[in-house]
Image (cartoon, rainbow, N blue to C red; front, side, top):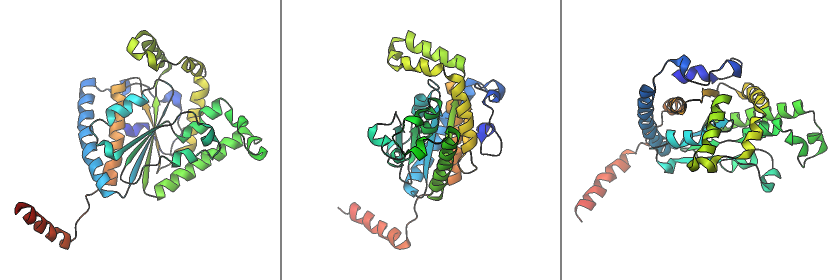
Amino acid sequence: MKADKYCFDGSKKLDLNKVSTNSKKDKVTKEEIIEKTAKNQEKIAALQERLYADGREGVILVLQAIDAAGKDSTVKHVMSGINPQGVQVTSFKQPNSEELSHDFLWRVNKHLPSRGMIGIFNRSYYEDVLVVQVHNINKSYHMAERVVGMDDDKFFQKRYAHIRNYEEYLYDNSYRIVKIFLNVSKEEQKERFLERIDTQEKNWKFDAGDLKERALWDEYHKVFEDVINATSTKECPWYVLPADQKWYTRYLVSEILLKTLEDIDPQYPTMSEETAAQLQEYRDALMNE
């Protein structure tokens, strides 16, 4: 699986400066990859039906990225063809006052998919160690002094531990957590911002605030690197995927999701002999109406 080279499970350290943002090193062709993605989508759709019927495991796909990396389009394209009844997409925005009055994982728990479902988190609880850390928001929390007065490094190291424990808890409760960071280059982000400005149909996507965040590019990259290294585990790995070419990103995500479902190997429930025998009776009754 090509995505394996982008997997970080705690056995090696991530250096974002050494991870490619495009497909050049993988020596692939667009036509070939698009064809493979379509085939993967067909397999994912079939496995998702079995996952839903089986109901013993759930899948949580976490998508994190810098602005304009392609999170929304990745969800849209990779999940096309899948029965929407078995997929739950949640986009996490800036927390509101109610959410801020609870622990930082509270709002996530409300949106956990039931087993048998694929849950997609467009941004996630990781925002509480990413944006919060870059902007030093933790100091403004309405919390006890023993918490907000804590040294920043200690505060976030504790949150990393909370996240690792939370993901272990979910794994032990029959969930598979797959975490994906869309690794877009600064040059490509600029082009996508310009496209949003120059294309009328995409004007609505542009937010002037994105430029302020872009000015903090280096800070975000440093924090993303720290977060991924601190929360990568064998059971809940991170995939740092090249995101400059959306067609290749979508393929890699489809590979990862397909492999996850294949590892689960969901099965349709089997009927007892008694129930199977009754089916013939039900069939006869319908035919004799």
